Image 1 (cartoon, rainbow, N blue to C red):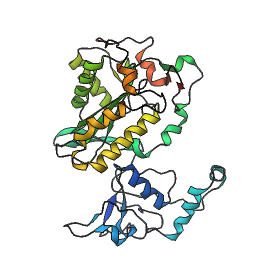
Image 2 (image 1 turned 90 degrees about the vertical axis):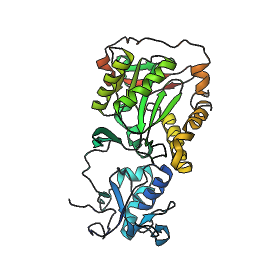
Image 3 (image 1 turned 135 degrees about the horizontal axis):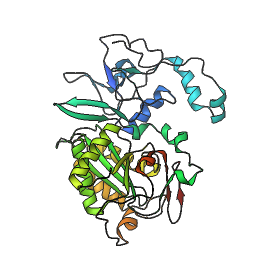
Image 4 (image 1 turned 135 degrees about the vertical axis):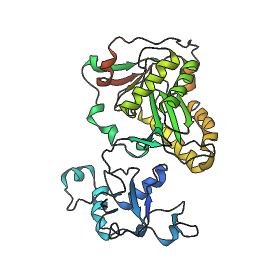
Amino acid sequence: MGRYKCAYNCESSSETDVKFFKFPLYNPRKLKKWLNNMKWDDWTPSRFSVLCINHFEEQYIDRTGKSVTLKDNAVPTLFSSSDTTQKEKTTGSPRSKQNKTPAVKPTPPISTEPQTTTSSIAEPSVHNEEPVLTVELCGYVNTDCFNSPLFVKPQNPENVIEVTEPWQWLGLDVRGPLPETLNGHRYMLTLTDYYSKWVEALPMDALLPEHVAKHITEIIAHFGFPLRILSRLPHDMVQKINSELKEQLSVTISLVVHHHQTGSADVITEQLIDSMVSDLVEEHTPDWDVYLPAKVFSLCFTEHSQTKERPFSVLCCKEVEPIKSPRVLDYADSSIKERALVVRWSSFTQSGES
């Protein structure tokens, strides 16, 4: 398989005996340092992207073990002087970015496998004869989707989903693979209430439809049925989750709907979750799953910067009885994907642009 240069003007990418290191996708703070030093703009690494060892100073390289690795504080600092073209592009004013065309377009960093998409979800893979989906941490590093024209508030009221009460519309996401804990957990399922900003987060050892459905069923048993749950998981995964939910909950409707706005309808809460996950894997790498409940508890009992309320107060202090049966929409389920989510809180109006 052919190789592409791991950095602009790199002379080592084609060498077979050179050591390569993956980007720290699970650590957004470290990842930001890597990308800043590379002086790249408008590019997001995938789980297949790597940099060669020649971009790291010797102080960052650990040669004491059986294999050469990077130290925890390692950041790439050695790049060709020609990379200054990227620095000029990155640090220029917004107006200059629009008017200035770079003299050379760098080749994207090396990919050790074919890369066909920049979405947050990779194609299904098989491990131990069970279908397991690998999810990348696009939620951490790719914010371009938040500025997409898809998320502009539509002018036609019929193309809007209005969120006006707690526990109506939820967002489902899965983060991982994260560093594997001693309990074998590598993924984190998150379920967010777009109105109250309440977050449920649970560890999982594998990304399987039955595991996701089981957690959703347990959450519904406590909080009741939402109208629907939006998700950016792959379509086939969503279908399998719905099949499991129909069996576990004895319902006929499809509760989970694939929707492009899942990760951008509430950017602030997404960033809070990302920060929480980053702190967990950085401070408690071998047992982040043990500390997860306390972190989520703190998140839900802290005043949200947008609502100026604690998620707990909005969702749990009004003594509203959980709805024990599936809820009917005023429009066809098939039209959900074409609608834009708009959260209308008592003290603010939030569109998909957030």
